[in-house]
Length: 608
Image (cartoon, rainbow, N blue to C red; front, side):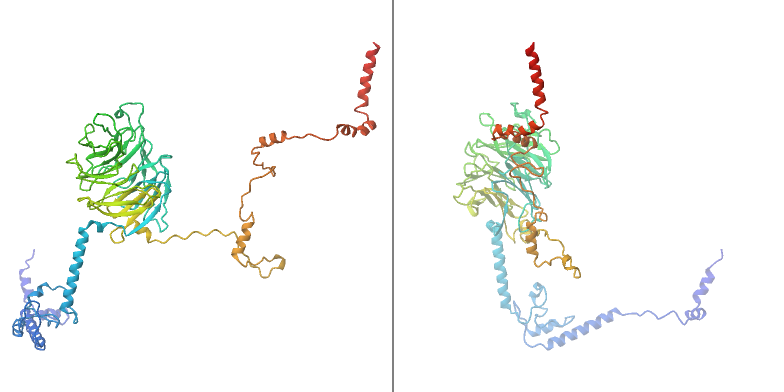
């Protein structure tokens, strides 16, 4: 390799001008500008100080400050260090101690300090009222507005709302289950589907699962059903053998169901109780047999009927209210002995219509058939925490429910027909004082449901109505989605008239009459049986045109009826015979030869 050292040194010694001359251009361009940053900063600082002094020199008077006044001398002293544009005249100088608390643009010129103080006081009062509203649970009851859903004419005995609050299902004593979609309904409030999943059995309970994709249907038969969101059957529980004495050895219930409930954590598990004296858990993936059996027992060890059942909020406990007035609670994994037991929760012989746990899981509320509402601490289960009496209950499925904030407890009251209004009664959970009530309708309030996400209350009544109470401010979605939609226009009846063909140059005999009024033409066509497709009326009298009258529904009955008719001839028989005398004398073919042959045979027999 050749050494590159001498050539490199020679190139570095060549000046820039010589290189530019050799390459044929004047130079390598302008040199980069250099800036003295210290000098620029110093010049900017001096300019800002001069401007600030000029602006402050033009101001007269002393600025008023909130806490203490500062003299103009101190202002000038402090302003000597100011950097930047002048201070606006509405604001105090930079030396003010309270300026650290000011945030936002400057106040307008006409805005006085008194006005600001008054507004601050108003804001404080509003905040205080808002705090009081937050502390008062009655203010949170959504009862300012309501809508009415017409389920039918009989008692609405079951209500179910999915976790998102989009769909509501109602069931009743008329065996129907109706589906309501709040987002799809308009102001006419019509259900989008109605079906009878259990044929001729009254619906006892409806509930969506925790995922909202299936519905548990409990009716008056022995087999619970699970439907999907559109009403199609997913599962039907198996029926047990009613001839087996030990109910633990049967695969399913053998008597009428009373209640059902989904597990709050496991989406495939649900719970049912029946008149056969058992509480059974089921798995959605196994329809041929129950999962576990719990058998309530009386103090003497006899079988008792559970009338309602539920899970605890964490799903670890199973509770049942029984017909002998007891409330029995089991561990979900131990089905033999009860974990908590209250022998005298309600009057024996009355149906405990509902038991439910509070959201914090420490309190149990029970609605008895003895017209009482009680709360219990399951850790001390011998005596109730609070008791409310005088709450009339005529139905075996009257509900009680906790408010979403766990501060209120609500239940419905029953009334006899045309003897008052059913009410929703609200109790404070701590003091158990009646704090509010809502008159629902001229009928009993049976089912009640307070949805935690929507903050809306659903009520089922004994006259076939399902009412939804809501507040436009405090409630979310739900009924608010459908009340704002206008009713859909009804489709007009299809006109029977044909299109009119205009032929101005046709002969008079071929021209069609001009239609002067569509309504008159429609009425005229309605009278025409061909254009209006009028069905043929039933035949009255003898049949005609191949059709048989109503009294002869078939051809054979028609023939038999005609054969049995009386066809007697009332004419003179002698006259009927003599009508053929002239014809017989003229042509005696059928009469004379026959008699001649007969006479010859008789003569021959006489000779012998």
